[in-house]
Length: 331
Image: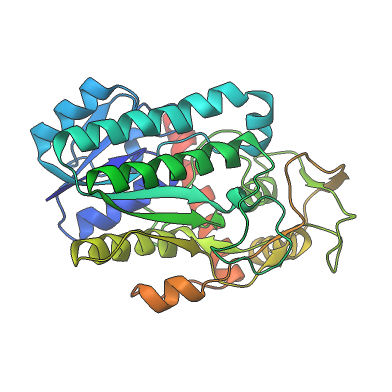
């Protein structure tokens, strides 16, 4: 009954590992540490350094640890970077997912949870956006994830694999107990960047576009706390183990916040102002992305605990302070 967590030393994956370990689920982590950190996961959890695209490695790992379910986080996730390096994104996200699925089929793994993204919707015509909305990604990142979804559907149909696809909206915050959080240098997550600027760890925050068709001209996103998101993975795994049919779910709260509203929340949390500058729009950024969460609430036993922007920001800020102390101590 071991769960393989790919990308388990990364931001979201490490939260998943802590959740599984806390529930006393046998778990093993596969990560190449390109953007993850070994210190983010419990020392007692088995860790394998490697790539999901290494089929032989994955097959051996699954057999050695008797893996029965895979939760697949490992991926490249930065939209602007994907525009500069589309081949890298198709290689790391789509091709490696294909090899991971090949290994899963070869070893009889029956349950697969896939980390997808709201970027598959592109610039949706209707917000909130439901799972049935057209999938028209506007970045190689979104396309690489959509292609992986299609491959997963076809593989499941041919080989009896059952899966849950979770399409994340904007993941933010950190573990409320301070065990893990977003630690990647030069990360692009708005709330993380704003917290770093507020703590003096970056010089300024840039707002990319102030002329969007939104109430204050800045982009609106559905920010979901990482701990709530990880809980959705746990209940999705229970759903599959209880015989649930393969399904795709949006993961968000059904309400959004603008860039300016996020900045205001960080200012409230830190208690002082910080430098914010405006810049032009970035390619690949839709004006608004908010989840229609009707399906996930009707199907899964998912009860978010932290669906509040100020709480998300407070946890993110606390993590940044811890991370700064750790980095100062380790040099």
